[in-house]
Length: 395
Image 1 (cartoon, one colour):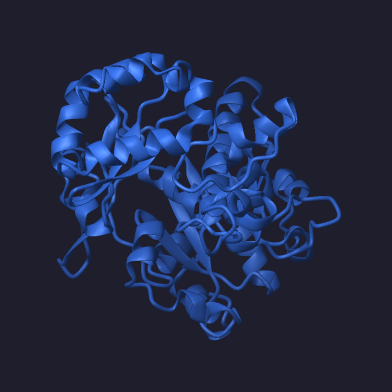
Image 2: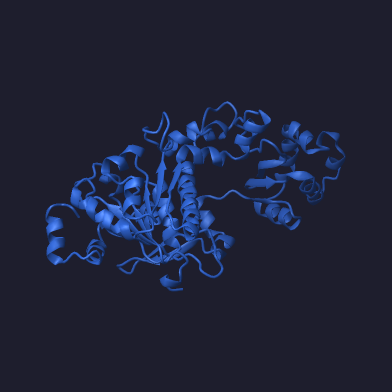
């Protein structure tokens, strides 16, 4: 499929973001064909530029594929002028600075709206654009703690545990992308842009989902419960003869199928297991009985047997095993993309699948300022003008 046939091909996105949440938002748009221009400071301008020095790392390549790069010193009037020229013709601006930074730089929503009433500004912050914590720096580790995730992750009594991935960063980026797409749809009707806001804190609490609802609606305080599920049983991790088996036999239908598949009809007659609440109440006893059965066979045996019976079950993979799985290969989760030097990289493909206009992995992450000249020429700058801008470290 050509880039022009991609669903977001008509849209230009200016990406001012760094680290993970903002780039995740921009990556989603880029994968579906939007022209995403990553705005980066010229060398020596950004005191944190060392954080992004290893552009060959898998993390950087995965976050910034399909994007262009323009170096631009936004702290200088000429740099700001160039950015506003781009914004006048752009559709979306993404930033994840602290809320006051865009105002100091003169790139706040009201300023952008004045040069382009159709512009959509997506602002991602740690704690929101206003409020008592608005000026705080927001990192995923901190937000996992403040959003409640660490309080329910891990085993009882072991203390708070962080999840092994950047949950609040990734979810905030995706919520922001959803907001951008919604704003673009609404703009078709109104002709007006708007300010889309997402925060790591709000996103993290939203991702707590049923755990948060348990407190708000039911008045329950969720706690650590290890690999078990707080509301249903049997669901959790069990020990087979050669490793760990994940089991998800929630609900009476799955419970019936589980007992039949394991040839344990007496469990169906046991009053301790007669209902879901009773199975949760007597979880320890039930888990012990299940472990006794599962110890007699391999993970592969039980996975096959239970899935054939309609009971959700599966192995626990290491990351290499994930990408060796036949279903993962079938879904083409690891997708090839060719670097400018001809080398083939494998990156994680876009998980949102469209039947007619799918996402594509077209290019690896750009080098710093790789597209500066072509973008500036599109704004009318000639060789002399570009040379002068470089000499003054504007680009």
